[in-house]
Image (cartoon, rainbow, N blue to C red; front, side, top):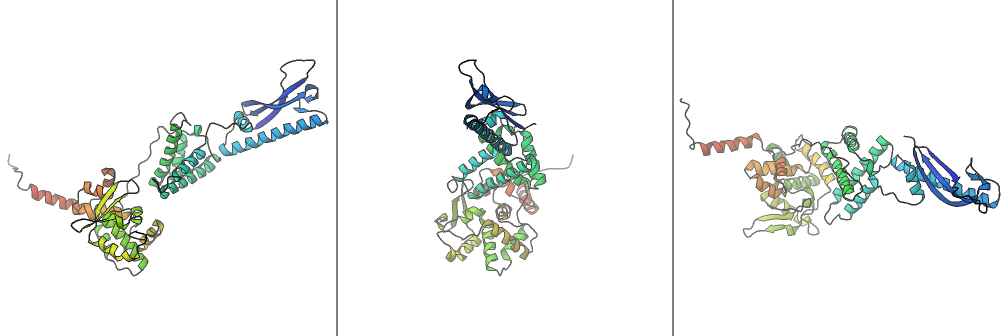
Length: 410
Protein backbone atom coordinates (compact mmCIF):
# COMPACT_ATOMS: atom_id res chain seq x y z
CA UNK A 1 0.00 0.00 0.00
CA UNK A 2 1.34 3.43 -1.00
CA UNK A 3 1.51 5.67 2.07
CA UNK A 4 3.50 8.58 0.59
CA UNK A 5 2.15 11.98 1.61
CA UNK A 6 1.55 14.91 -0.73
CA UNK A 7 0.24 18.28 0.44
CA UNK A 8 -0.76 21.02 -2.03
CA UNK A 9 -2.62 24.34 -1.96
CA UNK A 10 -4.82 25.99 -4.56
CA UNK A 11 -7.33 28.82 -4.91
CA UNK A 12 -11.01 28.03 -4.74
CA UNK A 13 -12.49 30.27 -7.42
CA UNK A 14 -16.17 30.14 -6.48
CA UNK A 15 -17.13 33.33 -8.20
CA UNK A 16 -15.87 35.86 -10.67
CA UNK A 17 -15.89 39.52 -9.67
CA UNK A 18 -14.11 42.49 -11.17
CA UNK A 19 -14.25 44.29 -7.84
CA UNK A 20 -12.95 41.45 -5.59
CA UNK A 21 -10.19 39.18 -6.93
CA UNK A 22 -9.35 37.54 -3.53
CA UNK A 23 -10.15 33.85 -3.20
CA UNK A 24 -9.91 31.33 -0.34
CA UNK A 25 -6.90 28.99 -0.25
CA UNK A 26 -7.81 25.31 -0.02
CA UNK A 27 -5.43 22.54 1.01
CA UNK A 28 -5.38 19.02 -0.40
CA UNK A 29 -3.91 15.94 1.31
CA UNK A 30 -3.12 12.93 -0.88
CA UNK A 31 -1.98 9.60 0.58
CA UNK A 32 -2.00 6.76 -1.91
CA UNK A 33 -5.52 6.71 -3.35
CA UNK A 34 -7.10 8.64 -0.47
CA UNK A 35 -7.72 12.38 -0.80
CA UNK A 36 -8.98 14.94 1.70
CA UNK A 37 -9.51 18.67 1.28
CA UNK A 38 -9.54 21.30 3.99
CA UNK A 39 -9.85 25.05 4.36
CA UNK A 40 -6.68 26.94 5.27
CA UNK A 41 -8.82 29.91 6.43
CA UNK A 42 -6.57 32.13 4.32
CA UNK A 43 -7.31 34.30 1.29
CA UNK A 44 -5.18 36.00 -1.37
CA UNK A 45 -5.55 38.08 -4.48
CA UNK A 46 -5.27 35.69 -7.41
CA UNK A 47 -2.78 38.03 -9.05
CA UNK A 48 -0.35 37.23 -6.21
CA UNK A 49 -0.82 33.45 -6.47
CA UNK A 50 1.51 31.03 -8.26
CA UNK A 51 -0.51 27.97 -9.30
CA UNK A 52 2.56 25.80 -9.96
CA UNK A 53 4.27 26.34 -6.58
CA UNK A 54 1.03 26.68 -4.61
CA UNK A 55 2.41 29.75 -2.86
CA UNK A 56 2.11 33.52 -3.01
CA UNK A 57 4.62 35.39 -5.14
CA UNK A 58 6.50 38.53 -4.28
CA UNK A 59 8.33 39.76 -1.18
CA UNK A 60 5.69 41.99 0.32
CA UNK A 61 4.74 41.66 3.96
CA UNK A 62 1.37 40.17 2.99
CA UNK A 63 2.78 37.42 0.77
CA UNK A 64 5.65 36.63 3.14
CA UNK A 65 3.31 36.14 6.13
CA UNK A 66 0.86 34.10 4.06
CA UNK A 67 3.59 31.74 2.83
CA UNK A 68 4.83 31.41 6.39
CA UNK A 69 1.32 30.30 7.48
CA UNK A 70 1.08 27.82 4.61
CA UNK A 71 4.46 26.34 5.52
CA UNK A 72 3.30 25.99 9.11
CA UNK A 73 0.18 24.13 8.00
CA UNK A 74 2.31 21.87 5.81
CA UNK A 75 4.62 21.13 8.73
CA UNK A 76 1.73 20.31 11.09
CA UNK A 77 0.18 17.97 8.54
CA UNK A 78 3.45 16.08 8.08
CA UNK A 79 3.83 15.83 11.86
CA UNK A 80 0.36 14.29 12.31
CA UNK A 81 0.96 12.00 9.35
CA UNK A 82 4.20 10.67 10.88
CA UNK A 83 2.60 10.16 14.29
CA UNK A 84 -0.39 8.20 12.95
CA UNK A 85 1.78 6.10 10.64
CA UNK A 86 4.15 5.22 13.47
CA UNK A 87 1.30 4.33 15.80
CA UNK A 88 -0.86 2.25 13.48
CA UNK A 89 1.25 1.41 10.44
CA UNK A 90 -1.51 2.68 8.16
CA UNK A 91 -2.85 6.15 7.48
CA UNK A 92 -5.44 7.81 5.27
CA UNK A 93 -5.79 11.40 4.12
CA UNK A 94 -9.00 11.81 6.16
CA UNK A 95 -7.28 10.62 9.36
CA UNK A 96 -4.49 13.17 8.87
CA UNK A 97 -7.01 15.92 8.09
CA UNK A 98 -9.03 15.10 11.23
CA UNK A 99 -5.90 15.06 13.38
CA UNK A 100 -4.77 18.41 11.93
CA UNK A 101 -8.17 19.97 12.56
CA UNK A 102 -8.37 18.55 16.08
CA UNK A 103 -11.18 16.13 15.26
CA UNK A 104 -10.74 13.01 17.38
CA UNK A 105 -11.08 9.74 15.55
CA UNK A 106 -13.95 7.59 16.78
CA UNK A 107 -11.83 4.49 16.18
CA UNK A 108 -9.94 3.42 19.26
CA UNK A 109 -6.85 1.29 19.00
CA UNK A 110 -6.10 -2.06 20.60
CA UNK A 111 -3.62 -0.91 23.23
CA UNK A 112 -5.53 2.27 24.07
CA UNK A 113 -8.61 0.21 24.97
CA UNK A 114 -6.44 -2.36 26.75
CA UNK A 115 -4.94 0.45 28.87
CA UNK A 116 -8.44 1.62 29.79
CA UNK A 117 -9.41 -1.90 30.85
CA UNK A 118 -6.24 -2.20 32.93
CA UNK A 119 -6.97 1.09 34.70
CA UNK A 120 -10.54 0.01 35.43
CA UNK A 121 -9.28 -3.33 36.77
CA UNK A 122 -6.61 -1.68 38.92
CA UNK A 123 -9.18 0.61 40.53
CA UNK A 124 -10.89 -2.52 41.90
CA UNK A 125 -7.74 -4.15 43.33
CA UNK A 126 -8.19 -5.03 47.01
CA UNK A 127 -11.95 -4.56 46.58
CA UNK A 128 -13.03 -7.46 44.38
CA UNK A 129 -9.91 -7.96 42.27
CA UNK A 130 -6.41 -9.25 43.13
CA UNK A 131 -3.12 -7.54 42.34
CA UNK A 132 -1.85 -10.83 40.91
CA UNK A 133 -4.59 -10.78 38.27
CA UNK A 134 -3.65 -7.20 37.39
CA UNK A 135 -0.07 -8.31 36.80
CA UNK A 136 -1.41 -10.81 34.26
CA UNK A 137 -2.88 -7.86 32.32
CA UNK A 138 0.50 -6.13 32.43
CA UNK A 139 2.13 -9.29 31.08
CA UNK A 140 -0.46 -9.62 28.29
CA UNK A 141 0.12 -6.02 27.22
CA UNK A 142 3.86 -6.66 26.96
CA UNK A 143 3.22 -9.68 24.72
CA UNK A 144 0.91 -7.61 22.49
CA UNK A 145 3.40 -4.76 22.20
CA UNK A 146 6.22 -7.15 21.30
CA UNK A 147 4.02 -9.00 18.78
CA UNK A 148 2.88 -5.80 17.02
CA UNK A 149 6.45 -4.54 16.80
CA UNK A 150 8.02 -7.78 15.57
CA UNK A 151 5.29 -8.94 13.21
CA UNK A 152 3.71 -5.75 11.92
CA UNK A 153 6.43 -3.18 12.70
CA UNK A 154 3.85 -0.92 14.36
CA UNK A 155 3.16 0.20 17.92
CA UNK A 156 -0.64 -0.19 17.85
CA UNK A 157 -3.51 -1.25 15.61
CA UNK A 158 -7.07 0.09 15.13
CA UNK A 159 -9.78 -2.09 16.65
CA UNK A 160 -11.53 -2.39 13.30
CA UNK A 161 -8.47 -4.19 11.92
CA UNK A 162 -8.68 -7.02 14.44
CA UNK A 163 -9.76 -10.26 12.80
CA UNK A 164 -9.40 -14.03 12.99
CA UNK A 165 -6.01 -14.13 11.18
CA UNK A 166 -4.68 -11.63 13.76
CA UNK A 167 -5.50 -13.78 16.79
CA UNK A 168 -4.39 -16.97 15.06
CA UNK A 169 -1.07 -15.32 14.26
CA UNK A 170 -0.80 -14.07 17.85
CA UNK A 171 -1.58 -17.55 19.17
CA UNK A 172 1.14 -19.04 16.93
CA UNK A 173 3.59 -16.36 18.06
CA UNK A 174 3.02 -17.12 21.75
CA UNK A 175 3.26 -20.89 21.34
CA UNK A 176 6.06 -21.23 18.82
CA UNK A 177 8.20 -18.11 19.00
CA UNK A 178 7.77 -17.20 22.67
CA UNK A 179 7.55 -20.93 23.62
CA UNK A 180 4.88 -20.36 26.27
CA UNK A 181 3.13 -23.31 27.84
CA UNK A 182 -0.45 -23.95 26.63
CA UNK A 183 -1.91 -22.78 29.94
CA UNK A 184 0.07 -19.53 29.72
CA UNK A 185 -1.03 -18.98 26.12
CA UNK A 186 -4.66 -19.45 27.12
CA UNK A 187 -4.31 -16.94 29.97
CA UNK A 188 -3.07 -14.29 27.52
CA UNK A 189 -5.65 -15.12 24.84
CA UNK A 190 -8.52 -15.04 27.35
CA UNK A 191 -7.69 -11.44 28.26
CA UNK A 192 -7.51 -10.45 24.59
CA UNK A 193 -10.89 -12.07 23.95
CA UNK A 194 -12.28 -10.24 26.99
CA UNK A 195 -11.05 -6.95 25.53
CA UNK A 196 -12.74 -7.78 22.21
CA UNK A 197 -16.04 -8.44 24.01
CA UNK A 198 -15.70 -5.12 25.81
CA UNK A 199 -15.13 -3.34 22.50
CA UNK A 200 -18.24 -5.01 21.09
CA UNK A 201 -20.39 -4.08 24.09
CA UNK A 202 -19.22 -0.45 23.89
CA UNK A 203 -20.04 -0.32 20.17
CA UNK A 204 -16.40 0.35 19.29
CA UNK A 205 -16.61 -2.49 16.78
CA UNK A 206 -19.63 -3.91 14.98
CA UNK A 207 -18.83 -7.62 14.87
CA UNK A 208 -16.97 -10.21 16.98
CA UNK A 209 -13.46 -9.94 15.50
CA UNK A 210 -12.33 -13.39 16.58
CA UNK A 211 -15.43 -15.36 15.64
CA UNK A 212 -14.44 -18.91 14.74
CA UNK A 213 -11.34 -19.01 16.94
CA UNK A 214 -11.10 -22.15 19.07
CA UNK A 215 -8.86 -22.10 22.07
CA UNK A 216 -6.71 -25.18 22.45
CA UNK A 217 -7.42 -26.92 25.72
CA UNK A 218 -4.12 -27.96 27.33
CA UNK A 219 -3.74 -31.45 28.69
CA UNK A 220 -4.17 -31.11 32.44
CA UNK A 221 -0.99 -32.09 34.23
CA UNK A 222 -1.46 -34.13 37.37
CA UNK A 223 0.68 -32.41 39.97
CA UNK A 224 -0.03 -34.43 43.07
CA UNK A 225 2.59 -36.16 45.20
CA UNK A 226 2.47 -39.92 45.56
CA UNK A 227 1.89 -41.38 49.02
CA UNK A 228 5.63 -42.16 49.34
CA UNK A 229 6.65 -38.68 48.21
CA UNK A 230 4.23 -37.04 50.62
CA UNK A 231 5.57 -39.18 53.46
CA UNK A 232 9.10 -37.99 52.63
CA UNK A 233 7.98 -34.35 52.73
CA UNK A 234 6.31 -34.84 56.12
CA UNK A 235 9.01 -36.91 57.83
CA UNK A 236 12.38 -35.80 56.39
CA UNK A 237 14.40 -33.84 59.02
CA UNK A 238 15.26 -30.33 57.80
CA UNK A 239 17.85 -28.29 59.69
CA UNK A 240 17.32 -24.93 58.00
CA UNK A 241 14.73 -22.85 59.88
CA UNK A 242 13.64 -21.15 56.67
CA UNK A 243 13.21 -24.40 54.73
CA UNK A 244 11.49 -26.02 57.69
CA UNK A 245 8.95 -23.18 57.83
CA UNK A 246 8.17 -23.47 54.11
CA UNK A 247 7.87 -27.28 54.42
CA UNK A 248 5.41 -26.79 57.32
CA UNK A 249 3.31 -24.36 55.25
CA UNK A 250 3.24 -26.89 52.40
CA UNK A 251 2.21 -29.72 54.74
CA UNK A 252 -0.46 -27.50 56.34
CA UNK A 253 -1.90 -26.75 52.89
CA UNK A 254 -1.71 -30.44 51.95
CA UNK A 255 -3.92 -31.30 54.94
CA UNK A 256 -6.37 -28.45 54.39
CA UNK A 257 -6.40 -27.79 50.61
CA UNK A 258 -5.99 -24.07 51.23
CA UNK A 259 -4.54 -22.01 48.36
CA UNK A 260 -1.50 -19.79 48.72
CA UNK A 261 -3.36 -16.47 48.79
CA UNK A 262 -5.96 -17.76 51.25
CA UNK A 263 -3.20 -19.13 53.49
CA UNK A 264 -1.40 -15.80 53.35
CA UNK A 265 -4.57 -13.98 54.40
CA UNK A 266 -5.72 -16.57 56.96
CA UNK A 267 -6.56 -14.90 60.29
CA UNK A 268 -7.18 -16.33 63.75
CA UNK A 269 -10.80 -15.17 63.47
CA UNK A 270 -11.22 -17.68 60.66
CA UNK A 271 -10.13 -20.59 62.88
CA UNK A 272 -13.45 -21.65 64.39
CA UNK A 273 -13.83 -23.92 67.46
CA UNK A 274 -16.93 -26.12 67.45
CA UNK A 275 -18.84 -27.36 70.51
CA UNK A 276 -17.09 -30.73 70.34
CA UNK A 277 -13.71 -28.96 70.59
CA UNK A 278 -12.73 -29.50 66.93
CA UNK A 279 -11.07 -26.66 65.01
CA UNK A 280 -12.18 -25.62 61.52
CA UNK A 281 -11.08 -23.15 58.90
CA UNK A 282 -14.13 -21.18 57.80
CA UNK A 283 -13.20 -18.70 55.09
CA UNK A 284 -14.24 -17.39 51.67
CA UNK A 285 -11.85 -18.02 48.80
CA UNK A 286 -10.37 -14.82 47.46
CA UNK A 287 -10.44 -16.16 43.90
CA UNK A 288 -14.13 -17.08 43.74
CA UNK A 289 -15.74 -15.73 46.91
CA UNK A 290 -17.00 -19.25 47.69
CA UNK A 291 -17.11 -20.20 51.38
CA UNK A 292 -15.11 -23.29 52.31
CA UNK A 293 -14.93 -25.16 55.61
CA UNK A 294 -12.15 -27.60 56.46
CA UNK A 295 -11.64 -29.47 59.71
CA UNK A 296 -8.11 -29.22 61.08
CA UNK A 297 -6.56 -32.61 61.75
CA UNK A 298 -3.79 -33.24 64.27
CA UNK A 299 -0.81 -32.28 62.06
CA UNK A 300 -2.14 -28.87 60.89
CA UNK A 301 -3.15 -28.05 64.50
CA UNK A 302 0.40 -28.78 65.65
CA UNK A 303 1.74 -26.56 62.87
CA UNK A 304 -0.38 -23.51 63.76
CA UNK A 305 0.54 -23.93 67.43
CA UNK A 306 4.23 -24.14 66.50
CA UNK A 307 4.11 -20.69 64.91
CA UNK A 308 1.48 -19.03 67.12
CA UNK A 309 4.02 -16.82 68.89
CA UNK A 310 5.40 -15.58 65.56
CA UNK A 311 2.08 -14.46 64.06
CA UNK A 312 1.45 -10.73 63.59
CA UNK A 313 -1.52 -8.46 62.98
CA UNK A 314 -4.04 -11.25 63.50
CA UNK A 315 -2.67 -13.50 60.74
CA UNK A 316 -2.01 -17.18 61.50
CA UNK A 317 1.26 -17.24 59.50
CA UNK A 318 3.74 -14.64 58.25
CA UNK A 319 3.87 -16.08 54.75
CA UNK A 320 6.70 -15.36 52.28
CA UNK A 321 5.94 -14.24 48.73
CA UNK A 322 4.97 -17.06 46.37
CA UNK A 323 8.10 -16.79 44.22
CA UNK A 324 10.31 -17.25 47.27
CA UNK A 325 8.25 -20.17 48.56
CA UNK A 326 8.36 -22.00 45.22
CA UNK A 327 12.12 -21.45 44.99
CA UNK A 328 12.63 -22.92 48.47
CA UNK A 329 10.31 -25.84 47.69
CA UNK A 330 12.68 -26.86 44.91
CA UNK A 331 15.44 -27.15 47.54
CA UNK A 332 13.13 -29.09 49.85
CA UNK A 333 12.27 -31.56 47.07
CA UNK A 334 15.98 -32.15 46.49
CA UNK A 335 16.60 -32.72 50.22
CA UNK A 336 13.73 -35.20 50.35
CA UNK A 337 14.88 -37.06 47.23
CA UNK A 338 11.79 -36.12 45.23
CA UNK A 339 12.38 -35.79 41.50
CA UNK A 340 9.44 -33.49 40.80
CA UNK A 341 8.91 -29.81 40.02
CA UNK A 342 7.51 -28.99 43.44
CA UNK A 343 5.42 -25.84 43.76
CA UNK A 344 3.03 -24.69 46.44
CA UNK A 345 -0.02 -25.47 44.31
CA UNK A 346 0.96 -29.17 44.38
CA UNK A 347 -0.26 -29.15 47.99
CA UNK A 348 -3.86 -28.58 46.82
CA UNK A 349 -3.65 -31.50 44.42
CA UNK A 350 -2.13 -33.66 47.17
CA UNK A 351 -4.95 -32.76 49.55
CA UNK A 352 -7.55 -33.77 46.96
CA UNK A 353 -5.93 -37.03 45.87
CA UNK A 354 -3.81 -38.43 48.72
CA UNK A 355 -5.38 -36.97 51.87
CA UNK A 356 -9.03 -37.16 50.82
CA UNK A 357 -10.03 -39.32 47.86
CA UNK A 358 -7.51 -42.07 48.50
CA UNK A 359 -8.94 -42.31 52.01
CA UNK A 360 -12.52 -42.63 50.82
CA UNK A 361 -13.73 -39.03 51.20
CA UNK A 362 -16.49 -38.42 48.59
CA UNK A 363 -15.54 -36.08 45.77
CA UNK A 364 -18.56 -33.85 46.58
CA UNK A 365 -17.11 -33.19 50.04
CA UNK A 366 -13.65 -32.57 48.59
CA UNK A 367 -15.12 -30.05 46.16
CA UNK A 368 -16.79 -28.13 49.01
CA UNK A 369 -13.59 -28.12 51.07
CA UNK A 370 -11.57 -26.83 48.11
CA UNK A 371 -14.10 -24.05 47.53
CA UNK A 372 -14.73 -25.05 43.91
CA UNK A 373 -17.77 -23.71 42.10
CA UNK A 374 -17.90 -26.71 39.76
CA UNK A 375 -17.19 -30.34 40.62
CA UNK A 376 -15.52 -30.86 37.23
CA UNK A 377 -12.70 -28.62 38.52
CA UNK A 378 -12.29 -30.97 41.49
CA UNK A 379 -12.14 -33.94 39.15
CA UNK A 380 -9.09 -32.39 37.50
CA UNK A 381 -7.37 -32.06 40.87
CA UNK A 382 -8.27 -35.54 41.98
CA UNK A 383 -5.83 -38.21 40.88
CA UNK A 384 -7.13 -41.61 41.94
CA UNK A 385 -4.28 -44.13 41.84
CA UNK A 386 -4.47 -47.85 41.10
CA UNK A 387 -4.14 -48.77 44.78
CA UNK A 388 -7.27 -46.76 45.54
CA UNK A 389 -9.16 -48.35 42.64
CA UNK A 390 -8.02 -51.82 43.76
CA UNK A 391 -9.15 -51.15 47.33
CA UNK A 392 -12.52 -49.84 46.20
CA UNK A 393 -13.12 -52.88 43.99
CA UNK A 394 -12.10 -55.23 46.83
CA UNK A 395 -14.70 -53.67 49.12
CA UNK A 396 -17.29 -53.82 46.32
CA UNK A 397 -16.51 -57.49 45.79
CA UNK A 398 -17.06 -58.22 49.48
CA UNK A 399 -20.38 -56.37 49.51
CA UNK A 400 -21.66 -58.17 46.40
CA UNK A 401 -20.36 -61.65 47.28
CA UNK A 402 -23.74 -63.01 48.43
CA UNK A 403 -26.01 -60.77 46.32
CA UNK A 404 -25.84 -62.66 43.02
CA UNK A 405 -26.08 -66.28 42.00
CA UNK A 406 -24.55 -67.25 38.67
CA UNK A 407 -23.99 -70.67 37.17
CA UNK A 408 -21.80 -71.55 34.23
CA UNK A 409 -23.86 -74.65 33.55
CA UNK A 410 -25.88 -74.54 30.38
